[in-house]
Image (tube, rainbow, N blue to C red):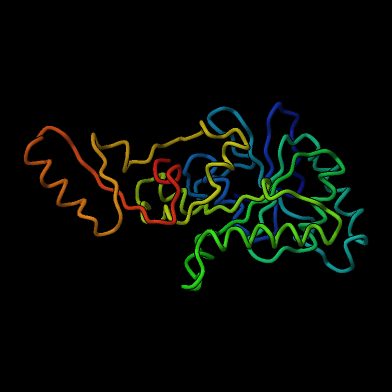
Length: 258
């Protein structure tokens, strides 16, 4: 998706803005929110969901601070909000993939001043969990990360609840939607909650092939004997199709059956 310099948010009952610094996973997140579409195929900005909800890819002015402090850049960012008509948004999602930056804090502050419902998407969760130390669990990381983000915002006088911080893996969501990423389900966390918050839970443009193309799906841990069970069932039920899907101990029930 291309950034349009003079992009203006149209007045609409529901519209969503995805904003952040470059390389924070904005396009991939939009593809995931669209129901599992690779960002390379999204050529319009905004993209329109099947329920006619526009999702805008937005960038910070100048792609971030050129110089100066938060207060020295505030007017520039306020003008950006006004000129781009961001006040028409029904929700603004700030993508942060690494450390919280001053730009993120300023955007959240201005959005709050203009009463735009704003949340934080902690993107690229799969990368963080893949490199997680062996002595640290997924839940430990998620809990610590939400605390870190809350503390960073609190230092600037912005008290935010952990309930508006969503740790997500958009890449995993897309791969799972196309049926090739069941092994990445362990990287999901708040992905479903984010879609529900944005009222996009019914925007699936394609179903999970692993679940939709078979009559019976056998779930289990890795090397739990799923294939042997399927082989046994096939010998008795020749007209029924079977599939298998892995999960692990770190995954909630909602994540497994999502």
